[in-house]
View 1 (cartoon, rainbow, N blue to C red):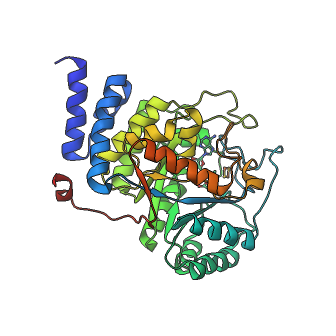
View 2 (spheres, rainbow, N blue to C red):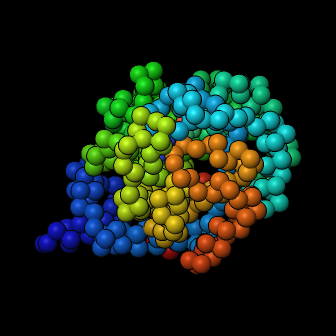
Amino acid sequence: MNNNNILYKLIDKLEEERILDEKEFIFLLDNISQSLVEYTAEKARKTALSIFGNRIFIRGLIEFTNYCKNDCYYCGIRRSNRNAQRYRLTKEEILECCRIGYDLGFRTFVLQGGEDPFFDDDILVDIIMEIKKNHPDCAVTLSLGERARDSYQRLFDAGADRYLLRHETADENHYKRLHPPELSLENRKKCLRVLKEIGFQTGAGFMVGSPWQTCETLARDLLFLKELSPAMVGIGPFIPHKDTPFAGKAAGTLEQTIFLLSLLRIMLPDVLLPATTALGTIDPRGRERGILAGANVVMPNLSPVSVRKKYLLYDNKICTGEEAAECSGCLKNRMEDIGYEIVIDRGDYKPRGEEFLDV
Ligand code: SAM
Ligand code: FES
């Protein structure tokens, strides 16, 4: 068998068994070619179509604070970045974003921010309850980093439905090279387990092409995600930010991100999988390519235009200038151009049995 045939057979095996071993994943990742990416994307696209049809779920992203007590080496809003202009949205501003978003058809709001101690449990509970009161038919997703179990529990009890916490890398040594010593993979994983236990639809994920990432660490990411079996997986290319220690590092590639999206779709068929803003930043058609490779979610920006340029995790971030309506209108057109339709739906995670895939 020539190399290509072995690679295609591995993709077929992944489709049948929904898992490969570490060596097999490494072999695939070591041998990425255009033809392999296309072969895998086609299978991933068919899998997504069999479960979600051509329906794309949207999430309205509200970047409500860029204060952060952490100092992750890759991140543009890390506490050591003195050039970041810090801001916090008020409760009223957050509620206004939701109101505008609701009228635009959003039924999920994602509150994302740095780890900002100002937003303690009492303040967050109040905001979550108010959003749920104003929009009882909407889901609230939180992306606020690491907190204690009782804090996560209070946010859940207040009505939050989902929580996004990327694990960033499942390899201990790699984790240490991306984060300062006070952060640990162990705690990150513990938080993910706790979130699931509490009952959140939980999302993990990683950056593609982060410094010192290898095919080995990526294989570990895939195996970790299989074991965790999350409701959502967020992956996007690493993109350097000029005011961070990783300013001079190379960005992740479109090809590798697309390939990983496809592997994830085939491995976790019903997972909610966004085509991220970072993917749209490294390539003007990145999000479309992501959808055609198996993604089924997009997350337009609902933050007020006045703060968008301040929530800069990486350089050249797209969608920092448009109004919410323009931004979601643009994505609607982009999805329609490739034969997909944005739907007005909470888009909850609904685990399905394998048999569904055979229909
Ligand atoms: N503080 C929360 C947390 O830690 O989960 C949420 C905000 S954090 C900025 C959201 C995600 O942005 C991170 O999980 C990371 O994967 C991604 N991110 C940060 N810097 C990035 C960069 N330079 N390129 C691409 N993605 C980046
Ligand atoms: Fe805290 Fe990036 S370092 S959000």
